[in-house]
Image (cartoon, rainbow, N blue to C red; front, side):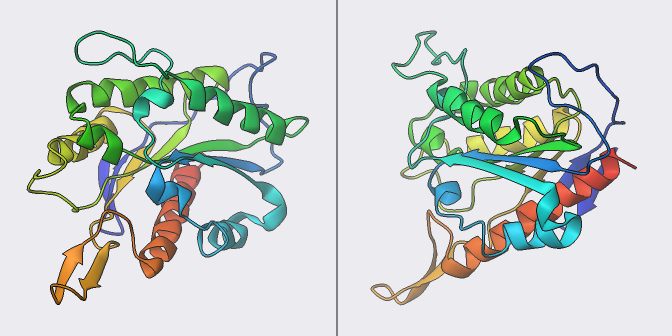
Length: 245
């Protein structure tokens, strides 16, 4: 089922089902502790979770009922999260899946001994792949990352929030695959269940003193990051409520 959330989301919701609890799974319970896994590159690394994301979740679920794990790195390609990544020519990059391992180790430590009611994966990434002209393999790679997280934590109904890369280079002048990566992200969101994509095109508008014009920056503005945190939290909250209703 498709629906628009706050005019910027595409929603595809599937019914949430219970799973058995193997040794490496996230334990299901009524504890109402909600796990949020955040990853990405510069626009995620610069996101101060204390400004809006965490306060909004605290308001919704209670400060004692949320667990947040974030691992973001400037210039991060999706290949660093995808353990089975291949370049368009079929070759394997030097670094593959290393950040996935680093991220999940952090998650494992954070959830040890805790009961988790829901898991939400939030990704703000794609600029690097647009610059490197890797759009042809981006969508399938992104789906593998999501599938790998679902498998590791035995969460077939894991929630996902994708931040679509902004309108920095819609002309594809310097980042040749910019528009293609945006399209790939929306396509993935249309093909999977329990997923939103959010629009970030209005979060990077800044005034260029040199040209004396409004420009679309590669990174969000100070206020843009605050709004980004709100949007991530609102999307995650809506997914949790939909899947647990």
